Length: 24
Image (cartoon, rainbow, N blue to C red):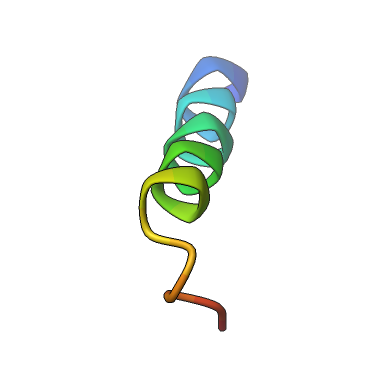
């Protein structure tokens, strides 16, 4: 489960870096 959460957090980070416009 922790690995899944880590991947999700990393995915969000990459998404924020790749798409700076997307800010919730």
